Image (cartoon, rainbow, N blue to C red; front, side):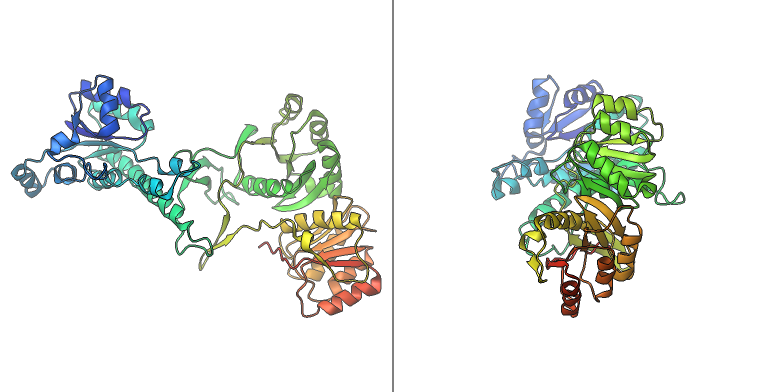
Length: 511
């Protein structure tokens, strides 16, 4: 199909001059509006104003420009339908073969400070999406381009006159995705006005940013997608600076590692295995934090994901080089550290480059019955209002360690029991069906002494048996949410053993 008439109406002028001049050289009549028409004329590209073409002026402060039968009739007419062509002839409507349209920058405007509600309402494009959808519906006869990245391809193939129906379908599919993402952004912005409850509908537009070798297992396909905002959906919050392609499981564990390590303000290191911490510590330095974290469980650390909340320096890199890790994730890496770590072929180095969560404050979990949605578990200062329920109150050092233990607990699969001492993870009991079993495993897995350590539970002790396991191991204080019908029984067991217990009133289940 040859292109004789085009409409160009864009907010993003990237590549527009080259495209306009290329179309003009191919004798394509260009219809345009407002700023786009002015931009092209200033660059000596011949343009016909849409208002002159339709014989109807722009009105309502520009709200009505392209909403006219001469525009949409020319777009929607099926070329091999004699009735359609006859109707166009009766009403003096010409065919429109090419649409180059992108939309008002609604999302970019929404991010600016001081923008009013009414100003954002005016950034909701009407004519643009309508033309895009019309042209995309009629893709067999109309080419629709919404992405400046496609201009070079378009120019090349217009010159060859070899754009196929499959090409037009591909562009139409991209265009429908574009308008769907745009409408989703508007709906999600409006949903923010109803913050007391989750909205009746959530519109997520996910842009593919990276293919994975496979999913959790080799027979599953997988890719990494990011919530798209049209302008920068391919921008990741991290940069891989060394190593082979990331796997699905790598990404999952990377997220677990960095979510936990950034809980701490002091130099910290965590080591993750299958989303659960097998090492965690706060140290005087990053290298000290790593040494302490590694001592938690050297065996399980092998092949894990190591996360830091400070730049990874040379001394830490030397320590890491002695053990096999899948991924190291940190805000940055010193040059000497890179010199050491890039000698390890099977290691992946990940640098955090942005907000790991962005503006997303909800979590989704797919089930056989539907998608569960919840707000994030962002509470991290529950000990601030904690209540001492035993005769003995915890010491300041015990309170410090309980705060550390509960932060680790929050990021560990339920049922969870955490044992910690001197800001170092000592033992972990994770993902068990019975809390008493979690307590037993936490003590069994302890590679360090549990005498004088603190215990943390993500939910209440339903019986005193789990607490007694910790007491027998030498735990001197415990933090838990409380709320069991047997709380008094549990408190009595703590008092009889002379340990301190604190109730936070906040549960941290993680399924």
